[in-house]
Length: 554
Image (cartoon, rainbow, N blue to C red; front, side):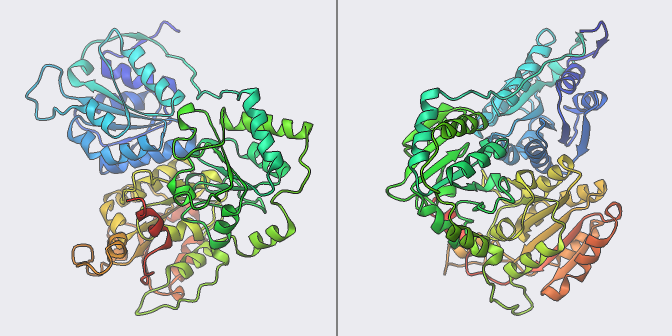
């Protein structure tokens, strides 16, 4: 440490220590409680994006953390600032996003403060870790502990700083240096051999990689090739095996009929950093009755948490794949596995939803969402980062828009909340400025988050927003069937006009002939684009196939 002294108050020290530790980007809405801490972050070199609502800022920080590989930070005012952000914080916490929520808190002795709520209990209630800065003597240790927890345990940490504590004089010698990384345990040798043994004997193995395997793609792909396995992913890891001719894409509710059939016929299913939960396995229907099930995860609590497994391996996915591959090379399998010429043909011809014929025609001034999305996939540049809001529409962009790799797809669906998409897309765009940001959202979720469109315009983001507009909360319309739908259906809204009012380019699309302006936007210089909002008037799909899967768990 140097002899430089910085920070006249605890608030200054909090911001500067977080900057020293390596926070990548901060998002938030600044009020009196977090003003000094936010400016201290900025003074330490952390870029800051001012959002229009704390909920949007929370989703921005979540997406930034997921797609950049760095710790994102949300900064909010005490009380109402935190409550405004709770849904986004809950999504991040349930997704195990390494993220810091820096929140002011009511003064420790002001029991009657209108801002006072039990912020620690609130954080814990949505699955986040609650921590606190206790005073000048411990501020460096407190902040460092919170940051270490976020990184090493892959947790969303809510760091409370009471405003009277924040105002206390404090000194720290800096810069503060520390290096943290998630644990990468090596698997036990006996567990490696057990997994290698079931892979050797499997005739139709399928590997399903999840969030915990996003950094182990090459190792798992090499093992899949050596073992004759077909690789697939959970939704959050979509793109991990892009370019592999034997890749099945997403396993679960988004699977095409061909993919679902191939997975359900597997005699071995191995989950790599994947929960094998009801979403990924269609409530277990994608696992055959006689199939052997194995699971690899860094956390022992994750093994068998959602279904019984025959082989459990506690270990880092990359390390485990490497060691199992070495075991197979010492004693190779005696058959070709699942990678047969016939399977290769089926995958090439019909594994992608884009290859499934679309016969629906535009009707009543509305466009078929599948045909629209396929056309957009051809227009949009391949080097993209796709974010998905939640709702009845969500399968169309998830299945019919391709992504270049696992860092081209941001899927914030752990809490199943609509309205997170716009903030998610902004955070993802800031995390990967080298890629074209694309958002798939519904009219309900887009209008719920509309304030952040101004943020995207202000930042000059070349963001393509596809609004699948059915003038309803479509999930409820299809879920409740013949019930009175007047509470979840709405008059048609000119979303393109609203977008233009925010300073974006707004385009109404009722047929494929209306995509010329979209093509001109794509062809224009990136620096001059700004956000484009497509108000896509879509036909009724009669209830999406993925929604049937989702509601089966409710």
